[in-house]
Structures are given as C-alpha cells and as structure tokens.
Length: 74
Length: 297
Image (cartoon, rainbow over all chains, first blue to last red; front, side, top):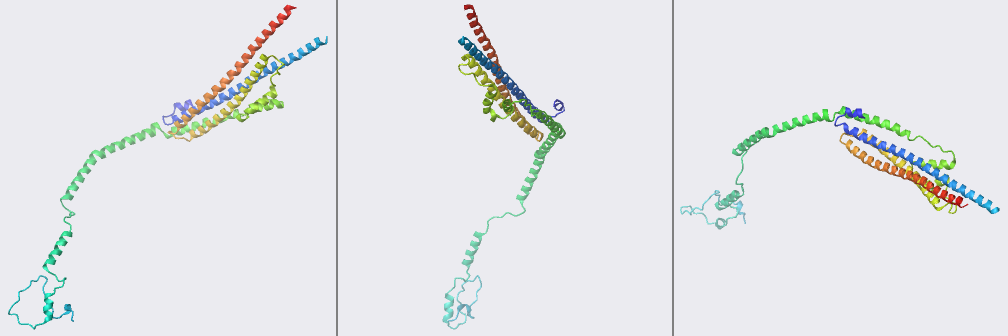
C-alpha cells in the first residue's frame, strides 16, 4: 500500500486512503478477536482457581466432619 | 297594378342627379296619374349624394389610419442597430468566451493528465482488489476450528464460548455451572469465602459472555469491511472519500468495542488479584487463630 501511495495521483489517492481505513477496521476486528480469546482465557483461569477454592472448602469441611466424628466417638 | 320597377316607361337618371327645373317648353305629355305618383315617391335604395357622402365617411372611419411599409427609414435604423450589436458582441462577448473556452480546455487537460489520470485510477483500483484478496485469506484463518474439549459438559461450554453468536449469551451461566460448579452451601464455608467465590464466578461468566459479544462484533466489522472494500474497487474518485468517511466511523466504533473488551479484561484480572489478596488475608487470620490455640495449650 505504501508503494502504491508513492506513485499515486491526487485523483487515485482517495481509493488508497479509503482502503487504508478499511484495513484499519479489519485490524481492529482482529484485535477484538484476540482480546475475546484473552478474555476467555482469563475467565477460564479464574474459574479454575475458584473451583480449587470450592474443592478446598469441601475437603476442609469433610476433614472437619471426620475429626469431629472421631473426637465425638472417643 | 303594374310593378313600378318593371315599368318600360321608367325615367332613367344618373347617379348624381339634380332636380331639374320644370321647363315650360317641354312638350306636353299626356297626363298620366301613374307617372306623377312615381316621381313623388322615391324608394330608400335610390342613391343620393347625401347617402354617398355618409357611406364614404363610414369607410374612412373604418379604414386603418397608419400602416408601416416593408422598406423605409425604420428598417434602415434597425439594420444599423443590429450591425452595431453584432460588432459589440463580437468584440466584448465572443472574445471573452473564447478565452474562457481555452481556459476550460486547459483545466480539463490538466485534470485528465495530472489530477485524475485514468491509468493511475485503474492502478489504484487494482491495488484495492489485491488488498481485498489478501484480507480474505487472512480472514479465513480466523474461521479455523480450535475446539479442543473432550468431555460432553466442557464441549458444550467451549462450543458456546466459540459460537460468535450473541444469542447464546443467556445459556452461558447454566453451562458454566455444569463445568465449574456452584457456590458452596451456606454452612459449608465462611461468608467471606462464599462471597469471594460467588464474585469470582460472576466475573468469569461476565468475561465469557463479553467474549462472545466481542467475537460477534468483530465478525460484523469484518463483513462491513468486506462490503466497503468491494465498493471502493467500484467507486469513482469523487465517491471514494464518502466510503472513507464511512470506514472512519466504523473504526471509531471498533475502537469503542475494543476499549470495552479491554475494560472487561481489566476487571477480570482485578478480580484475580483481589482473590489472591483475599486468600492471603484469610490465611493470615487462620494462622493467627491457630497460633492462639497452640499458645493456650
């Protein structure tokens, strides 16, 4: 595109300018797709961390029940 | 009774006549009662001098008073004025018009050879079509299937996240809970832990929903860019700036959507940092409690 701009005339320049803006729009769209992928990745990561917290809590509750049961039995 | 107009003895008189005096030496005519009656009774249609004068005056009153001839002093004056006008137009109008015509021809030549040469315009259009082809190839790369989940529940959630369809957003929460579970029951964890877990789940679902929306917006922008690219390749030098303005407006909107996605990403990372901090705080509290218990014994 830069080479075309170098040999363009005032009459053909608007075509290249408009095409550059369309390319800019496409770049924005691709950037948004990458951001969406990053959002999915981050969402999955914090969801995964949250699942670990849930499991730790459940495990802790189970251990507490076992300990309480053991102490109560004695 | 005999018709007087058909009387063979009728006395003929000229058009202009005067009553002649009665001559005494005129031979005596037989007294005829009929002739005497004819002389005294004059019909209205008999021409008289007075009638002729009245008719003449009427004709004079009806006839037009003035008429212009074809040739005369007026025609000569008109011809002279027209000749003068032609001379003036040749001097003061034709000459400037000729100059204007030459100027317009030079401007048209300049525009055709310098400003809007057809070869350069066609070359620019060819370049636009080449760019469009390259971008179409790049766009096809984003449609490659990247789904990787193997289990049914995770496959459902992954297909939702990669659907690029904003209509699927309401079904994300159910699929999310199928994969990542729900918040702990009320007596299973402390309120602080339950609140933190609920907020983290909410932010994770928000980010997933926003990702679907951003994907759909990006697809709409790409479709619009494809249409504008085709219009540019068929546009005229005067209409190309209009398409450029339209593309500018779309770029502004795309920037806004990109900023919205970045904001969602910042919220997600902020929740992650807050969770780590909260875990540290809870651990510190638990350690303090445990230390107190151990110290007492």
